[in-house]
Amino acid sequence: MRGITELALISKDKKMRNKRLSISVLLTLIISISNAQETFFSKFENLQDKKIIAVGESAHAQLDFASWNINFFKELVENEITSVFSLENDYSNSKTLNEFIQGKYNTTSLDSLMKNNLQGVWQSEVMKDFLLWARQHNMDKLDNKKIRFFGFDSQCGRCAMKEIIKFIDDEKPDLKKGLSVNGLELLSQIYATSDYNLKKLPKEDRQLMKETLNRLNEVFKEEVNSSHKIQIDLLALNHAWEFENANLLNFTNVRDKNMAIIFEEIIKAQSTPVFMWAHNGHISKSNNSFYKPIGYHLYNKYKSDYLSIALDFKTKVNSKTFTDVEDKKWLANDTDFGENNIKIIKTYRLGKSTIRDVGAYQHKLKIKNDKQFDYIVYFKEIKN
Image (cartoon, rainbow, N blue to C red; front, top):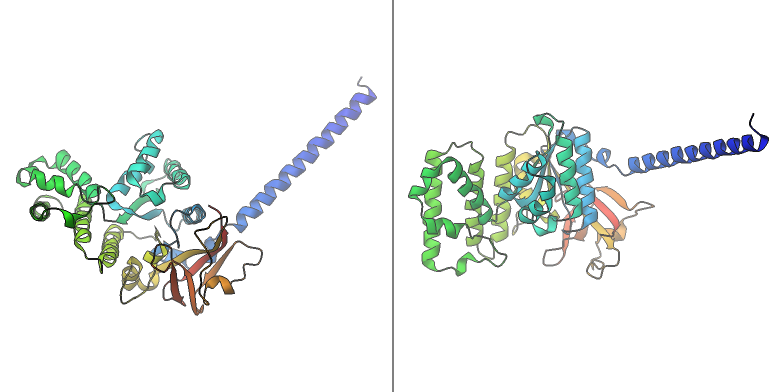
């Protein structure tokens, strides 16, 4: 028979366990409520009816923006709005990352794959976690439910040539017979380094590159199925050539026009919305007389089926780089965040305002109502 002291200890232990259980349940409830407050899917209208859901950022390489964009995409996946993720990254290189999330390559190779196939602004632990999550998500999904990853930039001739040469070697080795070895090598050097400048090459090299590219276009038209995906790599190579030959007054327009062409080519058979992530300046619908971004071209084609969501911030903690915007119309001056760090602003009747535009000459972008963006996801502060 147990003693009184032992029974008292057992009773006390039960009370402690019940108390810990209550605290655990309460914490779970608080976390659930917190997570519910951090979802943004319901803040945007008719997402399921859009062709493109374009999400931007006023500055690249800001991890708070990256986290928000990726979490928003996850919400879209969970609500079965889309499973297609596109990024302002080279088309040909992005194919490798798509192969990774489909289960190819070992997970230990991901750091190397990211280094070799992602532009520097996208290389972060946030992106790495996303790619691993997408791979895990795809493991038990049917093909039509799997996440698909693609890039739509086309400045990198080297990247396109890598895919083209591999295709020729593996499937059409006879095509090399009529192609200049030196010409192919020169084309493979386009954008191979950050300081590459085609215009500084000897005239005879540039002429050989042009002749080889024209011959490539001819043999692919004659010998390769027009619907084969390698045709987009060839298109990207032509774009890289055009971009390198563009002048200082129109090279940005050339790039954005070509990004729109690549994007449209990829999604032409897509029946559900596509998630798109790029700089605010690119996703803008603006019909500027000087600069027409990819958003202008896509909005011009898809109209209200193109949704443009900008991301911007008021303050970055402990940053000397991002100071206040010196403009009376700066959006931060008239934005009441209340107790929240993020406010979703519908721009329909916003009026004239100014937001950040890091990377542009003046580092600010003047907007008016919904002519550039349909929504602005405005952060009171970012930290990373």
